[in-house]
Length: 539
Image (cartoon, rainbow, N blue to C red; front, side, top):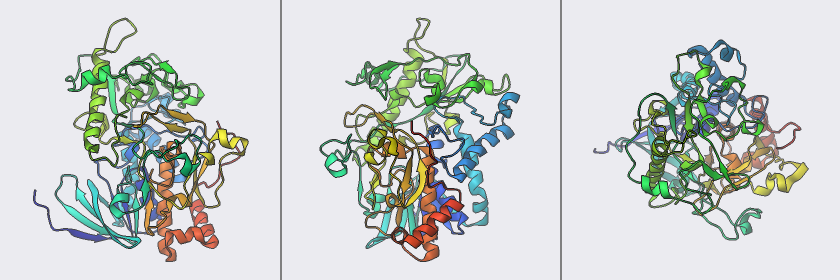
């Protein structure tokens, strides 16, 4: 297709990437009265929560505190959507903390399409007013810079045809992998930093820029009558026989390392168990866990709905066996090839489950497992987008390191409290196996804050990270990468962009001036962003 002439657009704030951070950033800027262009590469906005099909990973106290007001509105909007539109049982409808999937990984496991509907409803008034323009599906391909400033970003339609140039005084990179950083020449890092650079107890002696966390391509399945076995994947034999040194068995199996002890641990797989999903406490630290892979990330429990509404539970496959860590799919010339291999691994896992997986009754395989591409919104049955746990990360004015929040290092003192906090978060330092051959790193952390300095590139003046690309390390990325923290990062970045335009100053000036910082933090708090944790114990 012949490329059309470049069309130029101008806006107050350009947000590239429509994942959770991007949507939160756009909403924050729009609430501040600014015009926004928001772009997204995939058919669905929402990133982790929708196109990547990853149920939310959240702190234990999410129902009481620890997330922003707008993130809480998203969560409650999902529950309200089920109550208004789904045939819930009366008991489920009456449950204040409804967990539609009854999954153990979260207190709110749900179908991706419901989150999409709620996110779209949050953006709808701004689309109607014309202050928000959503460009979809567009991805960044080039940028125009002038010294330490980004002048414009060139976007290309996913089909490879139409191209647009969008200019704005402030640009936010909310892509899943920090795509604007190399395009704009913004200094960044990838992979594992060295202990000499960071002082982190868990860091290696030498930097390992190609050592990044596994990427996963998730998918949804149910279990119904009939034979739904997919065509045998071309690389199935390789994955069936693949046996990582640290795994404890073949990768296609129900044995995998326990993330915390690293000892091989056996899981079970029981489709449609005879359980009560309303009795599940959706948090693995409080009695759930991943022992039964079916219920761990279950996103629709048939018994949450009136009899006959759902023929089966629906579960989301984001298990250890789909982690692709043979080679990095970031900053590598063959990254696309490895993403395709990650997809082949996911298909191989499904085929193994359907044909060769050992059943409790002594048989093999569950041919009734059905790939639910309609649930993930894709023609090929898998999630629309790969789940990148680790992004390119800016070289920031302040980099969050392991000793800022590790429970082993900090002890009863708790995480470092930053004078420039722009939000809070909580998750263990949770790193999946990585492309350098590392096993899990999963250690306790303290409830932490998000420093403004981690949102400011060392050199570039008007580019802000709004997702997992902020100033963390390979290690601390493991707890800053989850859903509510990404949303808070985006909300802080969007608010900062609007505040800077209102005051006529560069974003870094807000951190440098005590008066501006106080005013900015006050704006965040008035908008429902919590800057400090209450006095609670870490876990």
